[in-house]
Amino acid sequence: MSRGWKGGSTRAWRRVRRQVLERDGYRCQLKLDVCTTRATTAHHVKGKAMGDDPRFLVAACQPCNLKVGDPTKHDPAPLPWGGW
Image 1 (cartoon, rainbow, N blue to C red):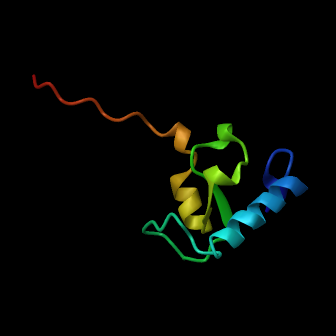
Image 2 (image 1 turned 90 degrees about the horizontal axis):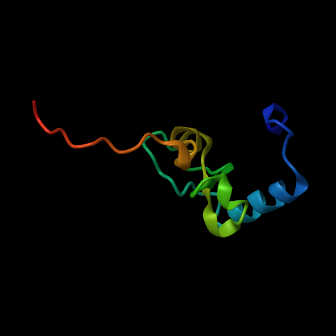
């Protein structure tokens, strides 16, 4: 799977990913409506800008990880409607 990513994954990332999956018991921590419960990925909770620090990673199944996407790139909250 990493072959599709620009630059691929590194040994360091694979080690951190494995540590996060083991820490969370290979159970998805996101648990969205598309959840398969079996975690295979590590999700960056605060975006990749925080780096690969395990404190900011949780185990996630692929469907939940893809649905959440990058948490730093979500649309801003809508402004309240002021009427006509």
